[in-house]
Length: 398
Image (cartoon, rainbow, N blue to C red; front, top):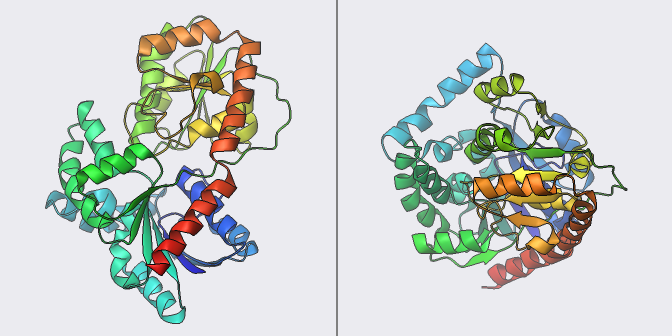
């Protein structure tokens, strides 16, 4: 098949964004048997990510969209660009996070690609890219809801974040209307499937989990008494999880346990807390994240809000590391306690589990290896890609 992918992020295995990694794995796998064209936004410093895609035979087209600007001029430009989306949000038409991805240059690019190619199917990644259904027209199409943002906002409301009230009210009406524009909808978890259906989605919804890469790493020595959290800190669920780790969990842990926080963009108020806390390290971006995760005794992910499948959880298991997380963090993963995924919602129970097991090296290694095997079986490339190919055939033949 000839397939057009439309993405807000440039897919890359080395991206700090889990969704960009997910899309990369899917499109390079599909490229072995299908002709793939990609239209994606690209940020400054990401040009090196294009070559690996081209090497897999993917036709790559990008529109520059600066997200993480650090200079004064860059921040000023971003601020001016965001005026329109903010007006839409204030007027109640669309959440800011959706509105900001409406882009004339991207619309023109998609129109040109469709005029020049005979695509069998178009796949839009992320609901925030729904703006381009007009350009897609009558071509068979599918949208992937990497998460259901109404669910994110609703959970944020429950934790007292009043800024989510307006976003929830708007998105709970918008998201089902977006889904109903498409021939098919994909969610990463059954929980998101059910939530979206309850909002009023009438299009067929298919649950297809992400591919999880199984790292080719040898036996890695565990760093004694080490726990960690990995995330991208432009997302509220990760910021909240780190806040809980620093303020509510770490002070109650037994002596000499070391907390390592990994990922770019930790907000200043949390970074400053870390600087003044003995035993907590903010490591920022780590290139060999697989090796790092394999060296940790436990990943602790006290995720209370959010939606979609939290890829950090099966990723850590794939590296042979036990994970303690909440029922929200474990959504869609389907791996039980006997295979290294310990699911608890009480902060007190999380603390007790860490204190009880942090020195149980044999247990943690055994459970980590069982978790690795479970991830390999559940999230394999063959299973995931075959599900997409069957879906494409069904849509095209309808």
